[in-house]
Image (cartoon, rainbow, N blue to C red; front, side, top):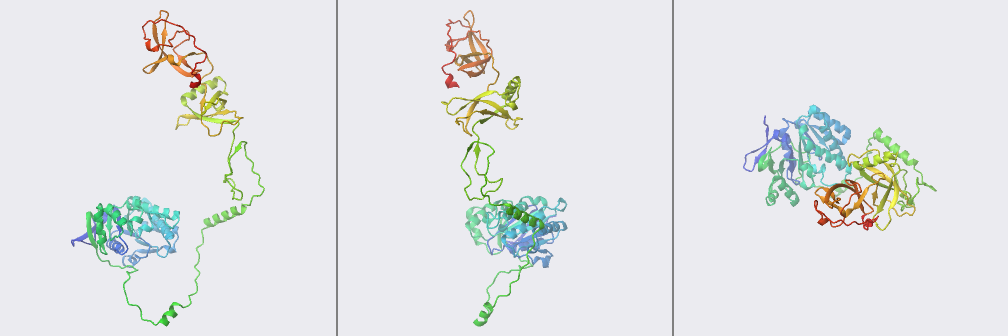
Length: 536
């Protein structure tokens, strides 16, 4: 069934209809400066749809309380109820399908936001069995979803903005059709306004509001100048529930009137000056003391606990603070006379420099190699791999390497990085090594053993493998694949491929070709290569 309610007449004089079922599946944004007829538009929409759908109005100024006499809306004065009570009222109104008006008149801005958020939260959090279709109208929506922080607390703003976001973003699937009205689009939070798909734009004068209204309606900026010329009660409509093209319409009359009618000119009363003086300057009535609402027991308990904690704080005089370790102390972070809280105030920092620890990570492949060697030494990685000696070199190459021993390793591999954190400890009596310094560590990958060393320049490449050119007894050149290791004293370790009694070519590799004969001239290599210092 399609229910079309008549909002008024189009510019051409035809009836302007609003598809109520389409509106329930979408959302509506009404915008217009003060005096443009927003409240009249909302009243017309509510009166026409009252027989068909449940309604709730968030009314910050008490304009819509008159709907209760004519259409049976339950008027809830938010000033007389707590936030918890309003949340329960929202839930019950949803369960029993009662149309309501939440009257926020008389409350300051912060309490309006808190109580509106509580009531909307009750509508939103009701059980799935009670997700009946419902129109939720929020007048002056910029008060409850401000674009920028105002004078209210951050907590109140977050509560109210969260409730409005739930209404406009997630409320549709819970049967809540949000209808928000605002004087200033620029003051309304963009994430709330962006969820609307139906628009009724009224008279607007500020350029920034006209520009946003034109963007929402898909109009050019120069076309937005037409918003200045709209009369009171005239609106530009667009959306699946209204019109697929921008359509001008004039809102029809209403059966009820706002409690606060628009001020009109009237003659001043005729009264003598003395009468006016006596009335205006009469003694003020006696002050009435308004009873204060008692705090909940939970809040009282919290206040008493805070008071007790405050009484326990005593000035500290001649207090001696002992550090749990020795080392070098940093600058003080608290001056004399400042308040110090136990277990929370940082006074300074202390670092230990002798011995000093060096932390580094090893991958799983290296871990298995180190773990095997540690087992042969009778230890484990967590115990420092049996005291395996390591060396570290800092950024200054002129400084000699520092020697230390593995001290500790973590008990698991980090599955996010595939590495294990290892610690080495170095003596640092002269204090050259500093905390936070970067260095390169060299950890032996195997136990001491005999091996083959060749000059690094004697190793060639054949695609993805390394080769060494050999010379047999007849002087024939042969290419021998090898598996290389690290540099040691300027020579390359050969892990596999050579036994040590071969004759290899170290000079003239560019002229050596497998299968050719060469004249051999034997040379003796020094124990340490000339480039050893540069290669360390």
